[in-house]
Amino acid sequence: MKPLLFFSSILLLALFSAPLLAEITLTTVAETEVTEVDARGEEIVRRTRANRVVPGSEVIYTITAKNSGAEPADNVVVTNPIPEQTVYVDGSAFGAGTEIIFSADGGKHYDAAGQLTVKQADGLSRAATGEDYTHVRWHLAFSLAPGEEAPVGYVVRVK
Amino acid sequence: MQYNNKSNTAGLILGLTFFIGGVQTVHAAGTESGITISNSATVDYQVGGVDQTQLTSNAAEFVVDNRVDLTVANPSGTSVVPNSTAQALTFTVTNTGNTEQGYSLSAANTGGDDFDMTNVAIYIEDGTTPGFQSAEDTQYSAGANASDLAADTSTTVYVVADTPATALDGEAADIVLTATTLDAGTSAITVETVGANNAGAVDVVFGDGAGAADAASDGIHSAIGTYTVTSAALTVSKSVAVTDDPFNGTTDPKAIPGATMRYTIDVQNGSTTTAADNVVLVDAPPANTSYEVGTITLNGAAKTDGAGDDEADFNGTNANAVTVTIPTVAAGGTATITFDVTID
Image (cartoon, rainbow over all chains, first blue to last red; front, side):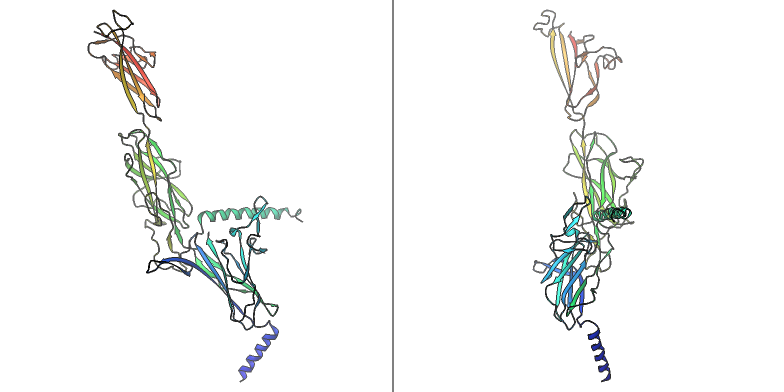
């Protein structure tokens, strides 16, 4: 009995001194798609762990936020810097029920695709394209309930 | 503040320039094989209106594999004249992949063209003097590694061959140069990784396009270079007309004994590109005629009979014959020689 009591008090202490218990686990997976021909001669696209990646290859990043705590998580914002050896593929970001915004200045400023500009060498601004993006950010429009998962992601092309 | 901080601004511009330079190089060569691309995301959230500590995901990592890609190109063909030796076609071999590789080379005549070049050899530019010099550039021996090339670098290769004497003006001979990817520093042909990806290791993927004589994705590339023969194409035509006779003079003269006959010889160069130099024409007056002294003309200009003083002579260079050395018959041009004989 004693250990349980002790444990409970720790739990209570944690509840009062720290924010409520809600724990998000975040996993990032890099995958590639391979087209294979099955026994019936039909092409099937299979997704595997990043495989045979060479310059020009497209890699799919999937980031899954899972609420493994007991309380709903609100205002969940997932941010991912695009790896420097890769380029964001226009229009590839996904995430059901999320608002997707991008940064083209190293994460200082975020806006919707098509709203961002970058300064050119001549000092003038032009519309930013996927090649200019440095970060992708997802605002979950919903609360992540305990046990719920929200997969988001995008595609990059290796430089 | 921006006015008294000039040194900072300069530093920023310098840094920016450097950054752009670096990006261009990466774009051109592609990400080098063996580099690990790592990605981890962060999440911010609230519970009950309270900000929680930002969390970072695992790092999703993969290693960039070796995309073998090469380009053989022949920017321009070479003009040759028949019977010329050591004629060079210039090719470039470029490593368009993302890993340093070696290359073996082969050169061969192709079918379907007008003729074949002979003594086909390959030389590698040694960098001392641009262009092919047999004394400087390195002759390539079959199967060897011609040169290790870092990603996005190229080397100049010469196909060197002799033109047969029988090649005619306007004819073409095609040579295909083939480069095969080798492991850098060796003469071992690079092999594509079969089967599953080796996570964390560099796999080999053939990403080359189809060349003139090879398929796509085979680690091989080839291009055709063309030798085109530019030569003079001479035709000679000869006509004769009676110019006067002892009875009629120059009015309706007849070819009777004592009449003067004028031979007109046209040397025509049918080539559209190449002049013929030092064309030697020899013509002996036929039997039953006698050469009339001092009647040789070349392109309308009178020439002497003596040897060595001008382009023409009689009974000098060749016994009892007219010899004319035409300095040049231009491309598409005609040289005209006349001389007179008397019917015996």
